[in-house]
Image 1 (tube, rainbow, N blue to C red):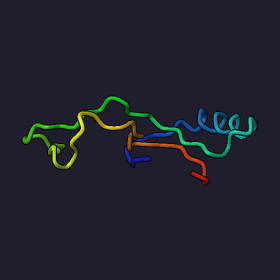
Image 2: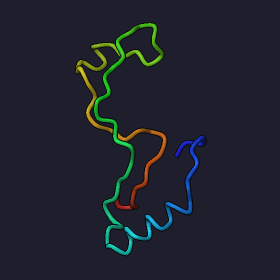
Image 3: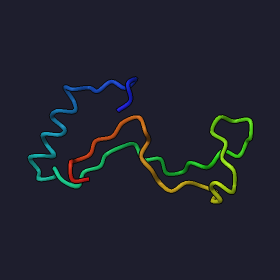
Length: 74
């Protein structure tokens, strides 16, 4: 997680315990999935990306970078 994220421990511990008890402790990757993000084509934007760098009109789904939960086998 990023340094500006707060984890709600009283909620996350029972959630993860439930996954463990249900046998869902492996192959786990949980995150906010970004599914409809498009490249920024405005040259004045900090996140500008050229068509040569990324020729497609939208990005494939990916995890947002601020936080994620994953099992060791991932």
